Image (cartoon, rainbow, N blue to C red; front, side, top):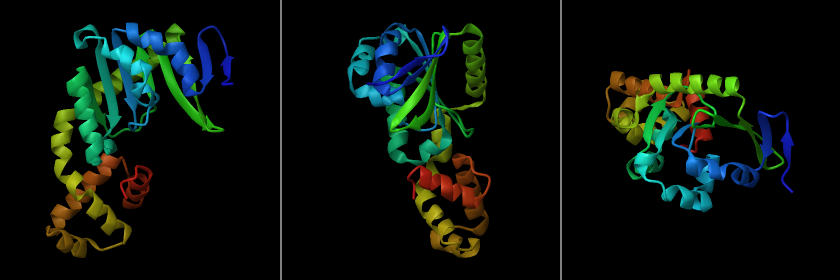
Length: 223
């Protein structure tokens, strides 16, 4: 049986997606303001999207609900993920923005309830369901700040389109330790252009070094 541990009237720690679904699905169907933040598409909400939660949400008209989502920029280096984000925006009327800052999987419903994703233990992920007003306000303020500083999906997608095409080759050359001059020749680019593309790739991955870019690319399955 999936455990649920009550830590107080305003915070519940839930272990397992099914238990979380049972506790919160009805809130998604009635919410008029939904804010989400995630590093990738492997979120609890998307995992449940093929089942009953999706069926409930499909009955909602886009004008009845405001949906804002913030995703990590590295996600757009994957062309399939980029297409899925655009489809979500067009199909559900979601407002989607992109940030290079690291974020935790978070869902805010009507500025009254927060779901924070935790660690995975014994194959199950824990989630904090928070209704304590001050805590919700604090998380909401952090989301609003991230939202203001993030870039609209269409704008960022246009900006990153070229580096997305080059990313696999650039990452492969970086992993081999190929010097910039040789790598630039391989790609048919000038050295300055190649270095600019590497810098853009590092920015999209939120990496501070070429080595870190390689690590994060592997974590995302880009190499």
